[in-house]
Image (cartoon, rainbow, N blue to C red):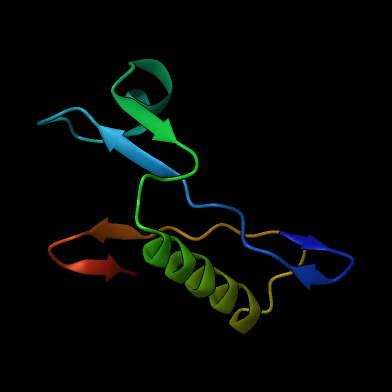
Length: 81
């Protein structure tokens, strides 16, 4: 998000889905199949990396105002873009 031309990353949001649940529109908005946690329950280092990558993407793409970045974080794989 930008304020007076200065970009700042907001805290990451974690989406947790029920076991054996396919995450889709219905699961997120209609059926309570997902829980959203803000800030995400991840280590501080992971949170800072996600914000760093989001800001870098925002700047590289030349986005203005606001943008959203999506990442998959698996602690056995790391951060997936």
